[in-house]
Amino acid sequence: MPDPGPEVARRIAITDAAAVVLDQLVRHHGPVMFHQSGGCCDGSSPMCYPRGEFRVGAADVLLGELPGQTPFWMSADQFDYWRHTHLTVDVVPGRGSGFSLEAPEGVRFLIRSRLLTDDEVELLAANPPPTGAHPAESGTQS
Image 1: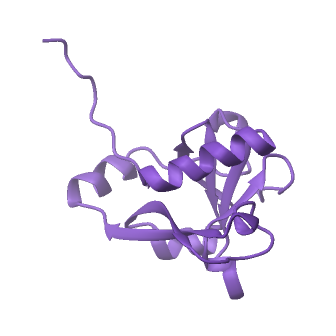
Image 2: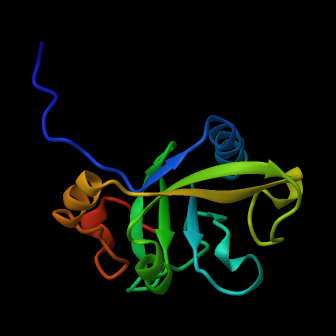
């Protein structure tokens, strides 16, 4: 049996139902991205935008990539609050923000969370996430 290599911990995942909606959005709009700001109203929900139509700030943190090479960014303040949490993008019926691409579809993305295990915290601390100040290092452009 081949060596699986170093253990990998992830900060972000997506449910099967949300991945279906994400795939539909990518087919309709082209490459997309997520950003979660923690601001007022729906700002604490993940927002889906056409890639390049939302400018990532220098302090924004790249949590990882979802299917379709979809980056998930979070504001630095929000990341400080959620740094010990694994986030899963899910989708539910209803209407979220008019700015997020899924809004006209009658669904909204939301975040489900769990605390990271001690092992995950250790692995992630050894590999801090890239920020918007260094997007080329992340392999993902906004």
